[in-house]
Image (cartoon, rainbow, N blue to C red):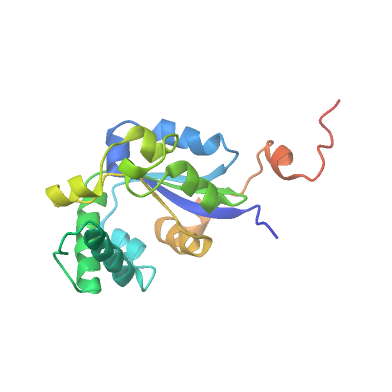
Length: 200
């Protein structure tokens, strides 16, 4: 059965805030019919960001392996060969990036929310993100440029990768009472089996 109330965490990162893209990003998600159920504007501390990325116990190794593989595909010798050490290096640059300024933390709800948000957001690397996605339309950063500068790729947004990941991440950024339960009129059009009651 399809979950009508799947939730996803979205963070507009410091570069998205600094480039005044908050309204545009929210509009993109809202126009699909997703419902905004929590929102806050914060400067995150290091502890929150560490909890966020390390909520998945295998994250360091997984990210490290991906980074090593990306270097090898380009025919470049990886600077760090141990996946966990490499993952830690990635975490260090992400920490510096995310705590550098305010972020907008949001929870979106709706049918297939995680997949819909990831489709709208685009791939992790802006350079290779599709035209029409947020990352593809609003930023031009690349892994290569980020590597040259020794920083995280500036890709505007974090979006949960799965519903399980989303529920863990939401608990890190929001208290239960900060996530609002309410009904939008448009939910009748999106989810009700019959369009009853439209005609007067």
